[in-house]
Amino acid sequence: MAESPDRWTRTGFLPRAATVLVTAPLLIGALWLGRWPLALFVLGLSVLGTMEFIRLAKGAGARPSWVAVAGAVALPALAAAGRWHAAAAAAVALVIVVVLAGLASLSSARRPQALANAAADVLGTLYVGGLLSYIIVLRAEAGFAAALTVFAVIWANDTMAYLVGIPWGRRRLAPAISPSKSVEGFVAGLVAAAAVAVAAGWMQGWPAPAAGIIGLVVALAAVGGDLWESAMKRSAGVKDSGNLLPGHGGVLDRFDAVLFGVPVGYYLIRWLL
Image (cartoon, rainbow, N blue to C red; front, side, top):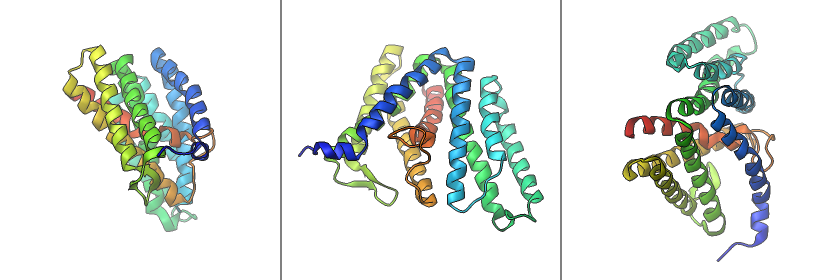
């Protein structure tokens, strides 16, 4: 039986749709332009997303430092400058800087949770700045069409899971983490993602089996990213990571699936095509 209209109102469908109509063209335009316009777009997302992550980490009891924000800027900058091969060295430097900064603060209020604080600094940098950097790397190495395909797969998965899950979802996918997600919506999202990947891949000359695998695996990664961000919010005791985007909360709420889906899509395109 179809859901009543007020169920769609309660789930914030109209604000979500309006936000997508505004933000999607900005992202697609940045992808199309590439280079520094895309880099500035990603840098902005990275800084805002890291600030949200710091808020979540503080809500969970950790006390991240300025290092997380610095790292969130450094990694996308490396990608934009065509120096992504230096990302591993930057990650090593990040760990060393975090540890040294922690040693310097052992006499301060951060001392009782030194391990949790250092872990939050490293995770905040790699989770937000590091994973968002793959938007730049994917566009630079695979081109606009391939990058847009990965985003289309993520959007198709999210949209179909929402449209099917709201009216017809009965079995909860992960009730302890995200009670609104259903098995029915999850399956519908995977089917939509695979179909979009095959159709978009056909237009680019991709083999259908490889395109289908890319669609399915990217969608699975996207769902994992969504669930992980939900788990962080539960740990922090908040509903949204921020309030920047009406109907979606913050940057992490809107790009949680992208954070996992784009890096996975990048490597699958490199390995399978």
